[in-house]
Length: 165
Image (cartoon, rainbow, N blue to C red; front, side):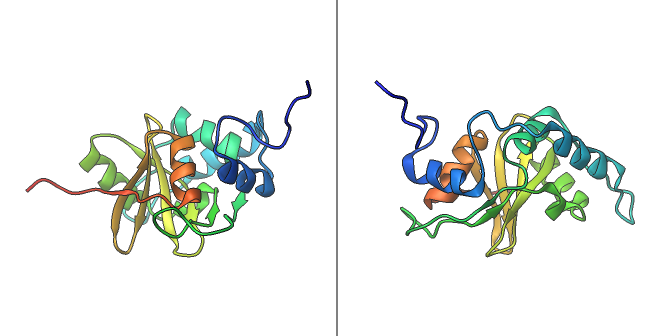
């Protein structure tokens, strides 16, 4: 028997293919770049003094997937698949926005990247849950980075966040 090097069981075949085309491989780990992003975010303050939260779940996601430009092929299962750029600096100037949403969700949020076609911001919380924020609202896309990438790349419908009145 030989090992199948074209896909992993971690992701579905189309998601795995999109990730590999973008440069991801199992075991990818660029902690140096992740630390640069962490330092940049920690060092940034908005004009009103808002600062980014940085935590292990974000740093780990950046180390594994950071820098990737992911371009799904084909149609999405429920909605159009999202082209992604995993780079937290897309959210550098959104510390207040992420802080406000984090407080509403009773957690902290950190930027993760962006949907490049729509300019939606991807964010991750301290537990590793992933969200998108765009002009139409705030969305929950998965309990961890793997589920979120699958939701976005496969074109699955995310869940809109709502506030209780």
